[in-house]
Image (cartoon, rainbow, N blue to C red; front, top):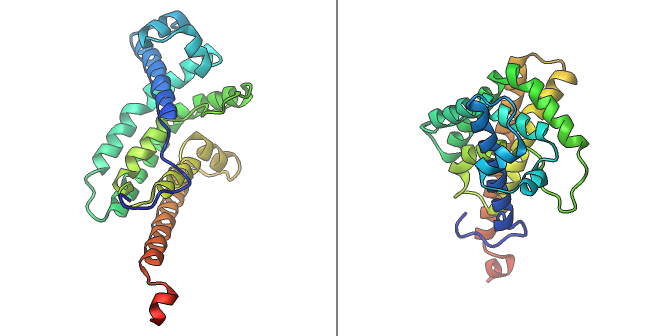
Length: 231
């Protein structure tokens, strides 16, 4: 909310945003080369297309396989998810309803693409989990998903305190994407449609819980103190 008091969870710092932009530029360059028919573009080729150094690429992607997997997944899902969020953006109603409709559309698009993308997602998860820990921790995957979530939740940005918005993005990230689908498939044995339904239900619950918390905060700050009331 624009007039909210500063919170401990500050907005994403500029350095982190720059890292996300650099990572996106590298993956997009690799995806463009793959789209041009280059089945296995090399690191030098990708670095030149992204206008970064080889060293920068290896800072974000320890192996070329991880980078190419990430780029391939983008080619498989980017257009459909972008279109789904855009189509749902005209949903009528309050900001919470609009955001929920956009998140639901995103979940549906990712679920529909799971047949082709989930095996690659499993491979990408394995590569990032097995990668050595960084001295300066940073996200190892999922920048594209976070951007989708932020875009889908954008109608709520002006209504929520900064820390609540960031917390909601993190919460939605837990119930959307390959990790969530793998849990629902491997641990619960759910079919694809049931997986989408559970992810959607979870996301809606998180959105509603966040809106309830914002209302509690707003109410508590607007009520007069007990001392003032006694006067």
